[in-house]
Image (cartoon, rainbow, N blue to C red; front, side):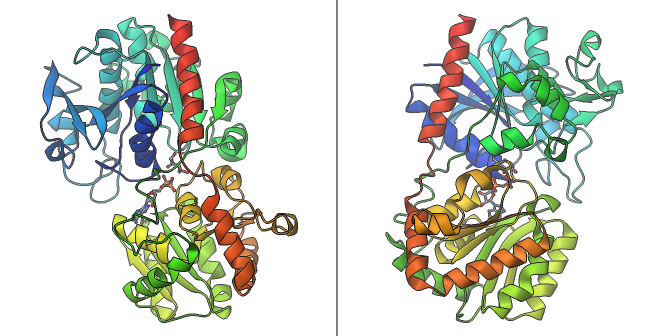
Length: 476
Ligand code: ADP
Ligand code: GLC
């Protein structure tokens, strides 16, 4: 049983841009079942502060990277939180990482150094009468924590989870003093990376254990194709690297109780939801499968492959309903496709309730990512009997069982995978899933398999618990 400080830049239901928030929001409760007590440290963004309710101020800073700050303790939505109220860093319009024009905030290094710094302070001196046995950081935003733990002279073990290696949190070496870093440690063994300060490198070198969000991504990270320059560092740390696949919150994503849909127990109950979804998106009835996609619109997510495969989907009587936002060029291309075809509908924006309706009403959930550390929407799809069509990479490889002849014969298939990750292979996969959809009996079996595939947190929480336990014991 360990006391764990989870350090994260987002956490559902308070603040979310992607899957990291879902993981940070769900894991504490899953770990409670194993006796671990998690408190989560989060920046007090403008939209977060008013949602905290009653808080207790458990720390004050005269100057936290450029201004005064307070540390609040509170409980919200079943989470025990520490929240950093530092208006000069977090009280602003725009996104949590980017301004209204989509550019990174220029002071992101300081903003997330503050998060990591406060984490180390809590580990060193405690807060609210509580001192963690373990600090668990997520992605580069928590990456400088080992440096600050070292400076504070505390031995508290640091666990680091890579949710996406694409983001390094690099900044110029001229910021060493501003970030309160130790010049003597600006070297290859600590936070220096090709002459820059790298928060990610600091975490990868300083963590007692490194995890990432699927077994396959843990292997991919060691290769130049996926390691994004960090493959050498990760190979160096390979002994301490493991993959633990994400789960989903089975209370929030439960077709039997979901308040945003017409609830159902078996896939037969999807018909009413499909009809409603077609109406929402202005689509008519269709013979082929209604394919849905819910995603950030970035290069990672393979949206261009989808655009290339659209004609094949439409020729097979299929439909597309897409919800997402991000890269303006992709948004425009998708809206143009929707304008050109009756059976293509696109909503640009972020809409949690609609994302649930899409899982309930879709026949197929598309995830054609170029790389995908874990991916969550294919897991929602499995739970809702919406068959995943995914690229063979990262967590998509680990969570979907491809409808190969062998898997079909053994009645274990849950979806369709494609490889290589090209427009041609994706197009072929679209044709393949449309064929499967024409065989109602087989489709029902696939849906049944999907809906009974385990997607909860229990098994993975046990693995985090084991890591914490081994480190707590070793540090005693
Ligand atoms: P990533 O973290 O790389 O964005 P994941 O699949 O792990 O990818 O998680 C994405 C999460 O964000 C899922 O919970 C998904 O439903 C949600 N999401 C993404 N875009 C939207 C959107 N436009 N509206 C609602 N939810 C979205
Ligand atoms: C990242 C990854 C995604 C993963 C999520 C949560 O944003 O892109 O694959 O599911 O983190 O771990």
